[in-house]
Length: 84
Image (cartoon, rainbow, N blue to C red; front, side):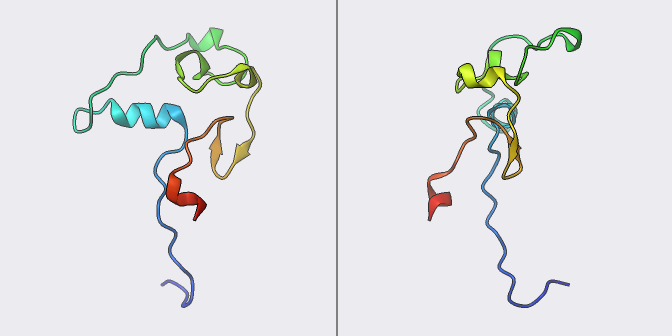
């Protein structure tokens, strides 16, 4: 039962570039593959493991990002209507 007066938050969709890429790779969507190869689990890069395959990666991604607003990314996707 939901408490009266609580407003439902509108889902913003995936904010981490990896999750966005995985969803776009689904056949029901654009079927757009993520470029590059997955790193070996024993040889992960420093910082964000997705950085070598991420179009938003910068030098900041060599450090582990903190978890902010439920996403651990230095450059998360922020929908235009999220600022309103």
